[in-house]
Image: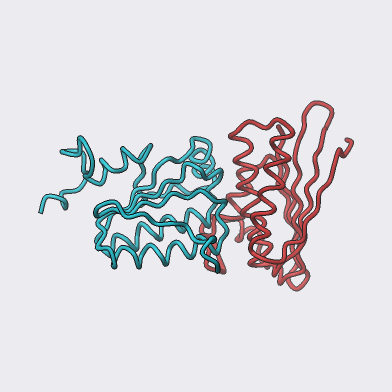
Length: 134
Length: 133
């Protein structure tokens, strides 16, 4: 698998959530994603970027444009050095929130992509990798 | 916050019309919630139409804002109708897990006005009986 291109962005303020959305939308359009697929991947990016900002205390976003030989895809990587998530399974459950949100962010984002990985250690941070293929 | 970062609220009779034409920053969304509740009271509005046809996504934050506005306006004796949701946005919202059960929707502003009992052909289309008193 050859990585075509990578973009990176620091997530330090709430407006960066909008910047992440714009980066992902531009890439999805460039790769020829359908309107529905664009909307899904941008929405997933928005949820995950807000988690990084609101719960992770800010962090880093990386966008990778992929091609696996047959299909183009977008991989979204979010990393923070925040408090981490003690129980990842619980955090993925709908309606679970420690903040002011609806608790749909993490589980919802997982449903909007094809591949989803999350690693988190309390006191160390959280890393989420989400991939959507065209 | 500057004026440019506020979403304008238009008064049409006893309705308020909000057309969201910017990519919704979280702060703008919070500000709109505050502004709208204030205007419902000041303008004695009985209905709120929120046109989201320009919005390319509705995530859980914006969805929560729409649900909050609907709930707050209901408490203030005004009905809210969200109009113009794009099909791809609707598909994504449901998959996200947000079906917004307490938010009334219509395909466009005209149908939204009918739903609120305003505009041509309103008779019999209002879904609640409150407008008759």
